[in-house]
Image 1 (cartoon, rainbow, N blue to C red):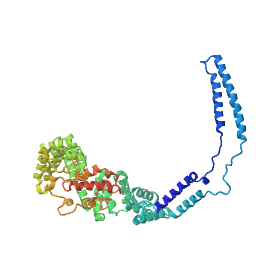
Image 2 (tube, one colour):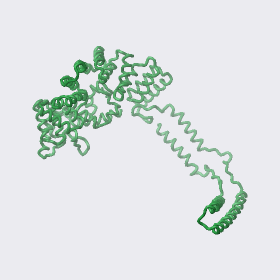
Image 3 (cartoon, rainbow, N blue to C red):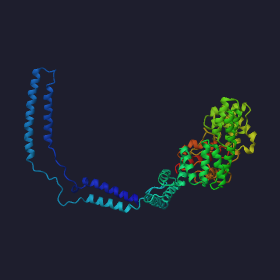
Image 4 (cartoon, rainbow, N blue to C red):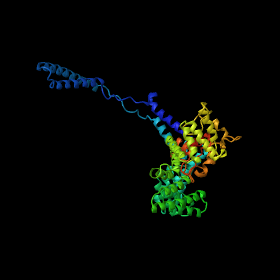
Length: 533
């Protein structure tokens, strides 16, 4: 309806502009303000006068020549001046043309447009609704219209009476709709104007700032905790932020407090894992402070971080071990190599992993990454050897899709092109339709749920629910993991896919448990649909 009325209004405006050109009765004669003959004579007069003045500056002409030209220009100028006088008398004798509008004529086009415009504004005033989510003012879906009316009513209530009840109701609507700007504006207003400030506003602002401004997030969560000490969600994220900033003892106290509150917000397992980590690293940090740094203490600290899934923090300590104590420490070489490979520095990662194997640091994880690295570099024989060692160490039943990857590498080594490339960075293969294929060589390996025999291919939502929702929330708005919905950082498709394949921080990698199709489907879903919410 709105779009139809706007079209009518635009057509009426076009008619108003075109009417004077199409209908003679609607147009007025243009005023004849200047006589063209007079204009020509004035221009000629001005040119002659300029020529006379310029003669005084012409040093390149003889005096006699200048005098001759001056007499000629002056005679011509006198003639033009007489013609101007005669033309002025002729123009003055003409009857004056009527330039006023005919008496009694009404500008019906303008009146009609004014009535139409005013009527449209009056009638449509109650129909135009604020935008909610992806809906627009031209939406005809009832749910969008209902949401727009609800938002309009909440906005008006907050404008009339900006108290805690109205502001929090409006902020909650924006939060549920995923409107980050609206959430920030309303909750910031609540914190700035209300006394005491509402804990919910501080908590949600803190959650939104966790990735963009961690220091501000910590301050807001501390404020929310002081305003509402018994809120489990606040304590959970506060403990995590304290851990991020290295306030380990305070973080340990917060995790203990979270567990005492009960499993009100989920995350009990995460809290226990964090407590176990803190109980391990706090004594190590104390020993480092008292005894000074040593290879043994750095190894204990790095191992604790690595086991907790914080590989980046672990690698800091492993790198110090290699550069300051023992450049041939097998564990440090292996784990730094794995992180370099994950970061895309394949050649460096393979070099360190090879050195780790040579030093006796042969563990299943190192062999798996070494095989992946050699495959990415097209070192087929080396990849086969590394993956074969991995299968021998963990057993065929636990090797996932690695046996299929070995068959793929063997085919390439023999000069045969497999049906499709396996799921490794740098070797994607797509069908003519643009969708990724599964490698035939992987057919003998265990399959994930998305390709189990006798089942249909799972949708992106089903894959997300099965593999991601436990940490990122069923609506992708965060849990023990960060929020993905509306998060601009996850628009980077390559980063998302790499993270799903190999993991990051506390998040495990899914390379051995999800197929290439499933990983690509999840990556596309997260980087496009979830990021745009």
